[in-house]
Image (tube, rainbow, N blue to C red; front, side, top):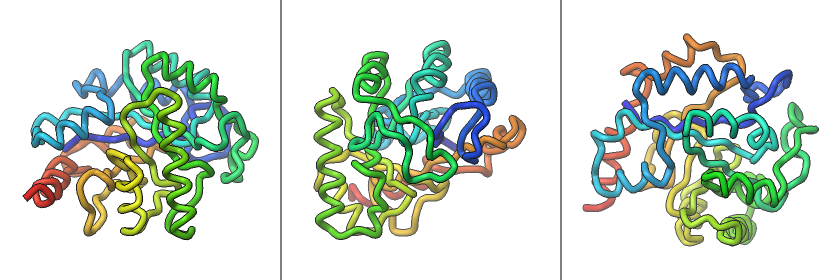
Length: 245
């Protein structure tokens, strides 16, 4: 088991988006994890533990990640995270700060955080990652576009004060060429939208995540953390060992 990298999107009431989690459910999930003895840490901490081979210590670690940079992260999720003293990473669409969501028909009126709001959450201890510049499917665009999306968003993260560079693949899509471009662009890790380690995955650029949906009740959420749900440390540990040999 573990670490468990959780993938959230919007935390809000009354949305048609299946990946929008109501605030009461989000807090219920977070509270249960803490009571169960899981330790919430940063994504950088997980990568550092993997690099030094501390696989056993990963078993009770959990990471909260949020894709897209919805404004409700600031207004709704952040107060809950701060109350429980839980770190988080928000993967921002760096070229669309302050815009409305354009890629999701279920959330087309949802607002993304502005640059000032992003700087505010950064000052509150939230880590920032890239979700590219325009939420492009990197597996379907040409090489020049891939590098533009990766390099420009990397620069934006730097300008916002981030020092650990992580990427979340939009739509969870990537290719081996994209993965290589992520390395060249200077990212230290990348996360997917899948619970499983992809076949042929290398190092820290295909870290799996557990997607959390809004219709998931607490019992269903709890089953994600039983012994058969994920054996992330064993799988990633084997991949990293092979890479370092």
